[in-house]
Every structure is written in C-alpha cells, then in structure tokens.
Image 1 (tube, rainbow, N blue to C red):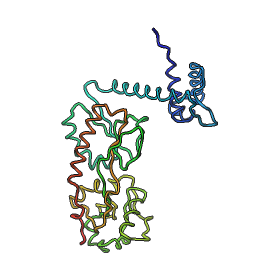
Image 2 (cartoon, rainbow, N blue to C red):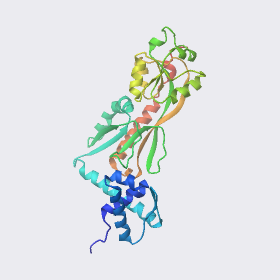
Image 3 (tube, rainbow, N blue to C red):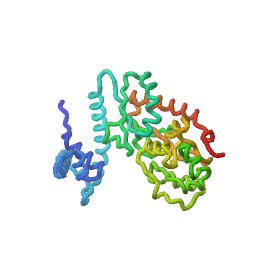
Image 4 (cartoon, helix red, strand yellow):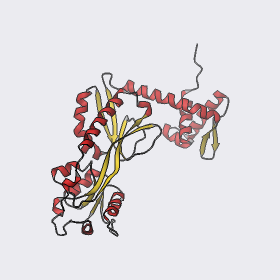
Length: 309
C-alpha cells in the first residue's frame, strides 16, 4: 500500500517558518525566496485542508493544528539529518566534532587528546574553534565545551570544573620601576583583558581598589593572546586557574598578591539530548569526565605562586 505523505519541501518550509516565527528568516535559512516559503506552506495547508499558521504582519505563529504537527516534523527531520550524517561518515570509523575556544583547546584539551585517541582509535576528532556559543541545529557539531553555564532545554549540560580568578603578571613586574606588591600598585600598570572588562571589574571589587580606569588597558578576544602579552611583561592579567596553569607552573607568570575569587565560573560540556545514545558522544563524555575529575583532584594551590608575602 502506497504512503500518502505531504511533500518534503513543504514540510521543511513549514518547520523552518514555525521554528523561526518568520517567512523571511525561513527563506534565508533554506536559501529560497519569501514567496517560495509562502507557496510551500499553502501546499501543506491544502494537503491537510486546514490552516497551520497564524499570519500577523512580519511574524507567524502556530495555531492548534500547527502545534500538533511541528514537533513530529521537527523530530523526523532531526532523525533524517542524523542518519544522513552517519551515511556520509567514513564507514570504518566515526568523526566527533568538538566546538570550543582556541585557548581551551590548546591549553587544556589537546595535551590530553592522545589518551582518548589511543582508547578509541575508530573515532576521529575534529576541533571546531569559535568564541560564540554554537547552534547544534544549524552546525554539524557533536559536543561543545564552553565557559559558563547556559540552560538549554534541548541540550545536556555537565559541569566539568570550577575556575578561580586572580591577578597574574610576569616576574619582572614584581621588582620593576613600580613593584607590584599590593593591589594599590595596579594604578601604575596596564590591565590586560580577555573579555569586555567584567573580570577585572569583579577582581578590583574583590581587592578593594576603586576608581581605577580600565579604558587604557589592552583588550583581546582570545585568552591565549592575552596570556602571551602578560608573559611578556606588558601588563597584569585577570587570569583563570585553568588557562593560566601552565604559565604558573613554568614560572612565566606569578600571582602578585593573595587575592582570589574562588569558583567564579566553570567550564561545561554540552551536547543535544537526542545524541545521548550515540556511542561516540558517550565515549567522549565518559573520558572527559574522567580527565576533569583528575584535574580537579590535583587543582593548583594558587598560594604557592604568590610572589609577595
């Protein structure tokens, strides 16, 4: 018996328009015209002999029939996309795509990845670095490791480890022209930022320094660059205990004074709930949890790196 199914193009147009609440945004996502989206949805409404969307100026919303249809179509398209991705993968192995920042990749994950690859030689690791939190629906990603918790109902979120915040600088600044022996001496030094200034604002509040202008500081979008500049003695960075660990252990950075913000934030692992049953995701999650627990159990004692008494 033949199946009586609506056209796939019409289903895709409806799903995109309903999810984005806009014909225009749906057209941009599917690389078609606004009119094509409208026409395809009319085809679908003719098929079901009833309206599915409520049109209101530039936006659309679901009526009761559309609300019943959308989750079924969304789930079906997700399944088709997932199977399609698997069919395109190497038949002798799988690829795990990890979304993360360049700094975290280079300073924490990559030095440990050899162990994962030895345990799971059939899984090929592909790193996809970016500063922006990913869209798992729009990007071909399996997991993400990101700074800070963010609640997404469709994602699994697992905290890996907490991060302490503190001031750090090259040893040369401790005994320079304006020795950095107390928070008050920060006024003589350039502040290095790897964000928009929020970390230094919190740290200055913690150490009790008021009225210190941050506008003339050095700002970087990449934490690795900010740490490199700090190592070169060009200023003082508000560092995190994860990314700055190697520089502290090697002696290239020191902690000028004993003021820390403990557990200011954390790193988290994210992946879609629909991927929980995938062996490659389970394998990476289990391995990463093991490494995170080991790292947390051997956490640096920041007091050991304080230069001033």
